[in-house]
Image 1 (tube, rainbow over the protein chains, first blue to last red):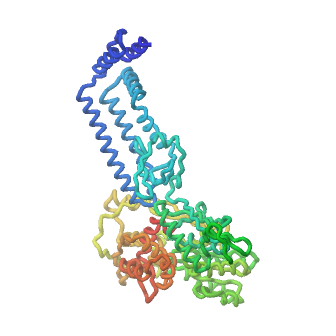
Image 2: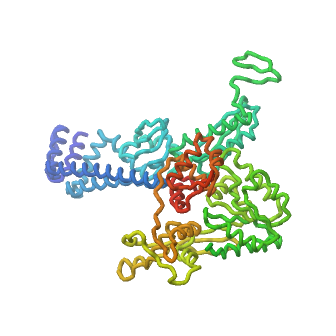
Length: 309
Length: 329
């Protein structure tokens, strides 16, 4: 076993093949020592590679800043423009990696194989999570289960996707917390995307009314409150739907409608709810009476205490 | 100098003919504010004569007594969008009117503000009640020039540059459209055309646009092809026998979302009484008076008593602003 491993490492060396010597550690260290001069890595190359990475980082920040600024300028096409951000980031870092391997290190095919072997070993031992996250990022960018600007629910986290990074996706929650979720984890978890790249998004608004209230009138009022909202967006494909559900102690009137911009989700809900309840009160439509059950001409209130109607 | 409305008149006449032969297709004439649709209705009324009744929608808000009592079989309702208000309970008059239209055996020819139409079509399905839609489309530069110069001899007017002309803007594409009447419906397919004159003028200094061409290019751009707006700007520029090119691009609009919503309500009606605006804005805890004052201060509306109206020269900027915010669809 030890001898086989020694062989593997010695084969990776291109210029100075070593013969098997006792002790794996000695073999590995000798092969690495022999590889470095073969790859021609010196301090200037390391500096060049670091410089390329630094430039890639700066370029990424600039491109992200410019695309974000531009996307907010063309407000109605914000999400379309933001789609380009992760693509640009991966393209810049991909180009930097290609440049480091191709131009700075000037690897031959055999050296590239050797480097891949070393990289594979490094990944296998310590960096597998990081690589899995980067690969996850690639998959997310190519498969597009969500895009920058979308509102998503990942596991228990809900918010607007602010950034799809190399390692993690960042969400901004409704209470303005920045949540980082590993790209690798996202691929293995259930994901709900509320708008799928569109600026508008469906919002479900539930109002609960007393069972004895006029449900038809309540539905009509909720419909009008929804379609007259300043935040609503209606089209053939984005209709307003009003639904009624009967429960033992109350009725639920539900509006399903689209807010024109997903960032206005909560304002839309609040606007419709407030105006609908103002109109409900004027029409004598009441909220459910908690803990009251009518049985014939008697009612049981608050844990079984009976009272006359 | 209203637009000729030749195609539109043919469509209305065809609807009347069809109606007399037993086929009823109610008509909706849909246009941006200031387009001049009332002139089209006046011409239609001349054709219809005593067979028809012409009424403004604002007289139908309380009840439909006028329509119920009418013996005429052809009813022309102008500014039908005034029958709704964007608030809870604001669709009563409109629903009553649509029920009457559905149950009546008369022909209805109606005019609508295009922004209200789009909204109401999504909310109430207006298109089902008015199967024949006549959209008054944007006019091109040449059409506007022809309309405005129709009353003048060639060379009668002198075009003067008030502001020193800047380097001429290179325009590669211009807007044109193909209009066709298909199965009784007006169809407009916009398409881009290459502005060879502008491109050539860049290459050769000799072929510069004349002051007249520059004036009408700018007029068409600022009016966004709306003949009513173009006519208003023309009246301001005309100082017979000179036409002074002091046309200014619409100002950029800086309003918050609530103020923009109020502006959207004004645009959807063309003009609105502040008390009516208040009925829409009060449930949102917004002051109609304050916002109306602000809109006037910004040069977007003007007030005449209690009625505020969109400034025609600001129309294009207002529409672009509201479209950007997705307040008009």
